[in-house]
Length: 171
Ligand code: FES
Ligand code: FES
Image (cartoon, rainbow, N blue to C red; front, side, top):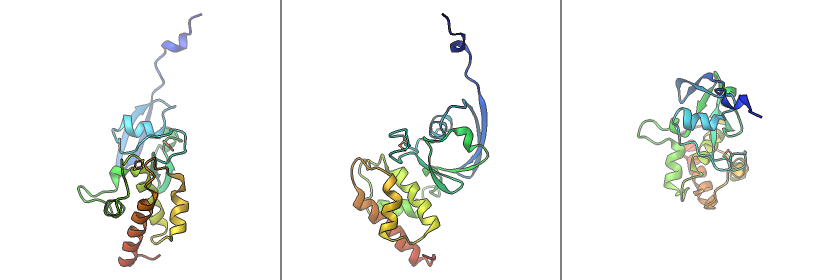
């Protein structure tokens, strides 16, 4: 029996959202995840895909300032909202404070997990500029590093937090 549905074009949905401060729109299918939309629809491949089912944290982005796993939500759910990816936190060639702290602390090896750790850290420090080590470990417990460089990642977050204190941010 012929399945006539297989020959139908996939339904297109126009999505408009604000990504890294700029309004972006693109057509996609309603079943496409936010991660795939960012990577394939908008070419923002800094958001990595590891497990694709919410376990590794590699796909973490900010949605209206909150860290979310972009593999677990549909692109249509982000319609009209503010999304920040790892491409959006640097100022041109100037790395963001978290990226600088990670670089100086050697907080990565292969770097695959790094965008997710960085975005989780950005969200953490936005809510609490000077978290203690327990809070950092708890927040980052949802991010997995296959190279197991966790100690240097924690060092990177602590360095960024120390700099927040030096800059006079409340903590
Ligand atoms: S790719 Fe989204 S949590 Fe692993
Ligand atoms: S640095 Fe390789 S997976 Fe984390």
